[in-house]
Image 1 (cartoon, rainbow, N blue to C red):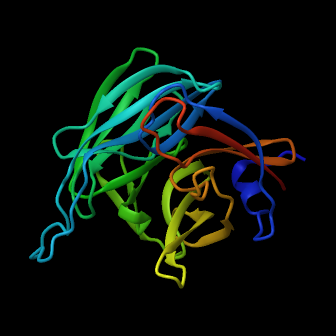
Image 2 (image 1 turned 30 degrees about the vertical axis):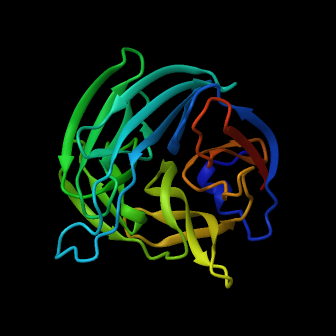
Length: 283
């Protein structure tokens, strides 16, 4: 039986077994992956190169809760076997956090924000055929991920930690704001937007009882008109470096009666230091 991604996600359970079917080393440094999308046989990956960590402020006095830090935002084009095919550097000044991206059938949409909540963002549109980069609009908040709605041409944006979803026009006008009623994970990347429903992956960290933390990953299906949770399920599979696979960058598709996930949860500082993980679950 053939399912859409959203339909397949409603069949996930806590007991669903994810099996790793491939690990593909990247031949380039991917830094801190954020978003992943697939167009035919080509993948597009956003990442953050951190040059100076942000620092928490003891007395923010109503402003940002941390310094801006320094970094670079990246968009990579790569083959299915992990080779770098293209590269764009995105961002400006303190805006270097390239977030979850979306492909609308012609262009890639990428938000680049400051690496702190309640900040500011730039939304870019990139034509992968010509490499042309267009700035679409600027917004006075952290936009961490975007999903294009194919029928209405609306954009669905996740704010810092995925706590709020903003429905916007492609020129940056706010149509409505939706509070996220699920609190067990923070949404990081949208994997499908269809018929007013969006499936998001994400992660949150919790105390482990011994002074450390453990990461819980998950996937959720939301009604983007009401904010209602239609279905959600945890994902507990860990990467080779110990991160849950939905830590940030994911792409999900259906293959027959299986749900296939491509994931890049691990950072890298040298080529070959991280792998594109390919996992499948029977649905």
